[in-house]
Structure formats: C-alpha cells, structure tokens
Length: 175
Image (tube, rainbow, N blue to C red; front, side, top):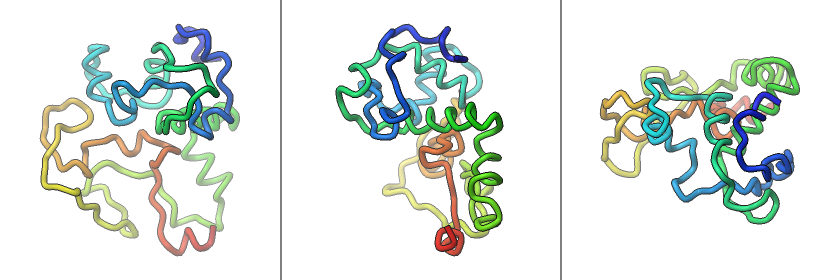
C-alpha cells in the first residue's frame, strides 16, 4: 500500500477496517489525538505547512501502537480520518467528491458540505459556533496567529469523515 514505507510497528499490518470503525486500532493517545495536535506534529517534523490526509497518515503511522489492533478501545478521530483515506483508495477518487456525488447524490445535494475552519468560510446553512470559554488559541497551522478555538484552533476540514462535515437540517432529514 501507499503507507507501507511509513509503518514501523509490524502490528499495523493487522489493522482492519472493523478495528477502525470500533475504535480498536491500537493508536496511542499519550500525546492526544493527532487530529487535534497538528502543531505538535509540525514542530516534531520541522514542517512549515500543516499535514493533511495521506501525508498526516504517513507521519502518524510511523509511531508505535499502544496495543495490537483489536486489543483495546480508545476513541480515535485519526482512525476515522484513516477510514476516509480507505474510502478514497477504494473509490479511486477524492473522498469529498465520492461521498458528495456518488454516495449522497442528488437526494442530499445542496445540504452537505465539507466543513471549513474559519467563520469567514461558514456556509449559509451553518450555525455559528461558540467556544465554551473565551480563550484564544494558536492557529492549528502554526502561523502563530491567535484565533478562537472554534474557528482556526483545529483543522476541521482535515478531519474528513471524523467530523469534517456540515449539513443542513433538511438534508439530514432527506438522508
């Protein structure tokens, strides 16, 4: 596969789609979910741009697992992002295009969108998000800019199938 060169822990070859679906991939969470620690990954790997998708997956798959796949359950947004990449590989096309055009189709068109990271990019059907506190955080991409946690603190678009969707109420009802 495209990730074989990145894998250092042989147990990753035992990983199945089912393991990912039930959060039993064995991924370590000592440093938190990689999907919410992009700046840390950027620092550790001396990156100037935030990694996404396959690039992020290769970087995380270099790490040692906490347990063999199937042994323990640890909620993992990274596992669901990895499932999105499995969908891409199986479909032979971009995840977003496949889900929107081939899976959701016309029934849900005009109501499901890839999430964005900033208030200025918000869709008309999307509500405004409010942080549980007023703390500003450093932007996920390492720019050094301070942003509201809910608008730029995380790469929500990069979550893909792990929470990177926005949907209108009518589109959810049609689904």
